[in-house]
Length: 307
Image (cartoon, rainbow, N blue to C red; front, top):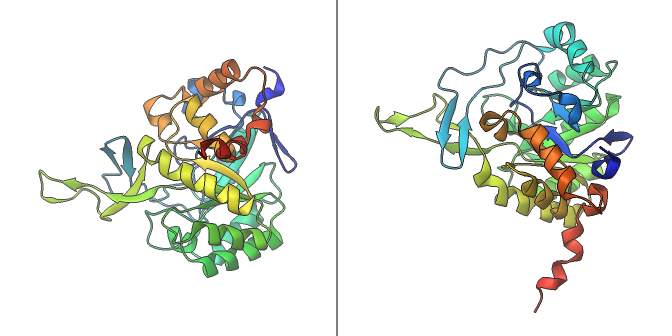
């Protein structure tokens, strides 16, 4: 395949705009049985915390119309086991490896950054938006002051590009992104899951132990797409779109609205081949243009809608 699908962000080059989202493919091992992950623009690991986490009690997944609810709770082996057992296998994959990290405090995030500084990973994604934990997670992402304080300290010590994955539950997304841009953040990921819930009607009680859970899937795509458009237009920051992508036209909608890359999440559970299929479908349908030239292109055409 030639480079018409290629995207550049800072010093990083992505073969195409397709990344697999954190929390949907573990460390890539299971899904690599279906296809060679090197075909992708990149993969984002499940979120790593300082210490191992068992995650939340079951149920953790609940089917909903046009999507799923999850309450995994950041189950992971911790940074020490990740560095000893997983990172070498990930680095054999010929694509960008982005490590997602999550913490309960600023010091935990900073310790995680230090642990990853001398590895060969491409970038670090700050998960400040997980809705399924008591401490840290979304609490950072919805409070601008806490988030800016954290990110300023992270940027001071990180040797890797830092992406910030935001929550759609924040009151003023544009204001938060402008604040992040002002302190030196170059890339934001829009979004983690929306807060939702389900009722187990047979037992007459909430389905999840934590009552609320993260909702994702095709139903959220128009909501996220709106924010990608607005953040691109009002901030000019580099955006990675994440929400409800199930086919290549969804990818192109995100790109045309202003996303430089996309992360595919829920669709991996429906079709483990989705990443490969999206790359192949984009290649077949982008003949005389390049993805790089299409980023935000719909903004140039919005006047066509004015009567």
